[in-house]
Length: 283
Image: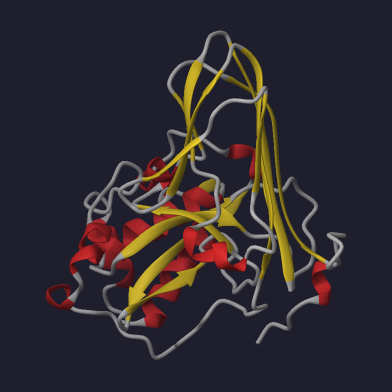
């Protein structure tokens, strides 16, 4: 399967404004590129890439005064495999965790695992440790939260989400991360592309998606708190402690977002979009 992913940001700034953008597919997927990613800006500016503390690809540039457009587009080969599952996967004792997993046990800006610790143990402490307990955390999010694309808020935290109500994918992710970390299960935030591939197409604007990865049995596993189901065709962009670490667009000065488009869909060898339902059979 070939999957085409991309984005276009249109912003307006009143004066030259430095930007940092985390929008490139992770380096591990670059060997899957059919051709190099096409990255363009209008007007043209120099774009410098570097890696952050989480090894994410960051693009640094200065938007000139006026309207500025940043666009990225690439087609990747995909193995057409659904997210891995191992119902026998086990939690790892904290003392046995690898050093680089420990940061994903800590509270962070949007993930107040310390505040929600008692609630997490009250809700899930009696459950058998392992995959099933992680899945119970995902299921709980769907009991208390209802997805609504138009309710995004940069101020809503996991503690806010724990009270229930309308939410977007980042809120589902933050709430799950808080409970898991409180249970001493390393869990990290992921931002990327997830199209309607192998599932019915949703009549809603395409956007970047947030999900999580959980450390069990010596490796990281994908869980999707918002969809609460396995998916195929995921393309990871960035990982971090929470959404604050993986902001798609960080501007060092005021800007107005005037246009935002994201795409993720299967294509044929000529780049023509295909019906996503033609791929994959859920198991």
